[in-house]
Image (cartoon, rainbow over all chains, first blue to last red; front, side, top):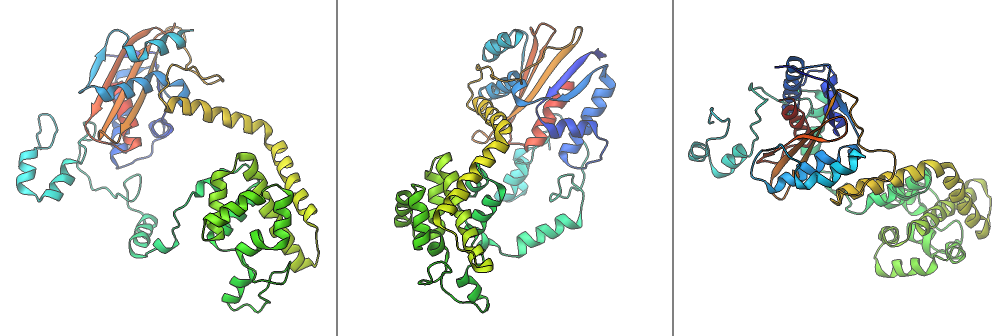
Length: 92
Length: 313
C-alpha cells in the first residue's frame, strides 16, 4: 500500500532534525527514528516530515492531552469533542 | 518477556529477581520499533561511549560538589530585563566571588580592609551595597530604601536580601535596583583604581541611562518575546480554544495534500505517555484522528519520535 502527498508535522525539533539527518544513533530514540525512516521510504511518496511551532500544532496537543483519560489506543472517524472547536477555528 | 505482545512477564520477573530489581526491569519500556538488543551507553544521548561523558560521570559521582550548590531563585537573575553585564555582576555577588577587600584579605592580598567610600567599616557585600552611607544615599534617591530595609531586616545575609528583593520587586523596580547595584560597584572601582570620586546623583543617573538605553536597544525584540510567552502559556494552561493573537497558527495543506499533526503528552502523575495524531485535508476539515497511550513515562524525545512512528504506520 502506498500513500501520497501527506505533510507530517511534529512540534519536536529534535525528532524532525533526527529524521532528516543520517547520523547513526544506538539509543532507543535512534532506533525509533531509523524505523520511522524505513516506514516512510517504503509507504510514502511525495510526502514531507516537518517541524512546526507548538502554536500550529494545537489539535494534536489537545488530542494527546485528552488521551490521558482513555484506557488505550482509540481511532476516531468522527471529530472527537475535545478538538471540535479547535478544528472549526483553524478551518477559517 | 511475553513475545506475542512484547510485554514483561511480570510473574516470572518477580519470581526470579529481588523486589527493587524487578521494579526496575518492569519499568523499562518495551517499545515496538526497537527490535534488537544492544549495549547502550546511557551517559551520552546517542548511546555511544565517549570519554567526555565518562569524565563527566566520574566527576559528578566521585567529586562532591554539593557545598557549591545554593538552592535559590537563580533564574530570576537571568530573567532580569537589564544588560548582561548587570546580570553577571548580580550573579557574582550572590555567588560570593566579587573581589571585596574582606575577601581579598582572606586570600592574603595586602590591602586596607575598610570601605573605599566611607573608610569606617569593613568592605563586605552588605556594607558596600546596602549599609554604607553612600549606598543609602543612592537608595534614597531611587525610592528603594524602604524595600531594602525591609529585605535586610527579614533575612540574615546580604545575598539572601538580594534574592528576596528580586522576588518581591516589580519588573521595573528590579531593573532600577540591579542597575543601581552595578553603578555602585562601578563607583567603587573608579574610586579604588582611578581615584575618581562620583556623587550619588551621578551613580543614580548612570543606572537610569542604562535602563533607557537597554529598553531602546531591545524594544522590537522585547515585544515579540513577551507575545510568544503569552501564547505558549495559554496552551500550557489547557485553554486550547483560544486562538493565538499573532502570526503563528496552523496552515492548511496545499491542494491535493493531507496534513497530519503529531504530538506527545507526558503525564508524570499517571506515569503514562500519550500520543495524539490528527489528519486533515485542504479546507481544514477532519479526516481521521488517533490516540495511543503508553503505560510508562518515556523521555520527551522518545515519546515524540514514537508519535511520528505511529503516524507513519
